[in-house]
Length: 113
Image 1: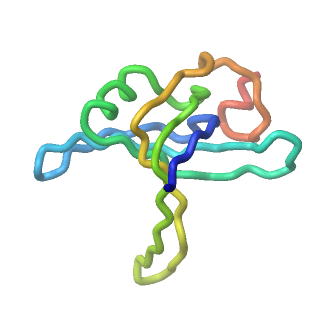
Image 2 (image 1 turned 135 degrees about the vertical axis):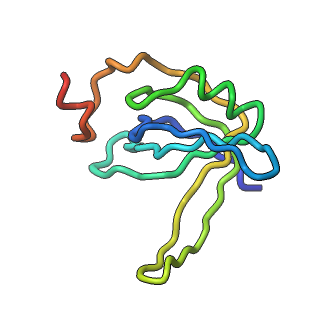
């Protein structure tokens, strides 16, 4: 079982794409800072179909969200570089706060405090 529940900051501008098959795909990068830790974990969040549409209506850069989904760890190679990405395939979400919440990830949004 690879179920994951995580809370974090939507750190990039989310985007919606539609596949050739007509599936809606909503994706963004999530910044998560574990309590008591001096590090930030970065995940890619992806939703498909109906959850993607609902997320597009409610989520923007700077929103704090709780996500429920399946953990996916993928190796990638673009010809010049290779690596591993950690992703959550979202099936449910909760908007935890509005975009003006204070946080400390040193992103563009933090500069607006």
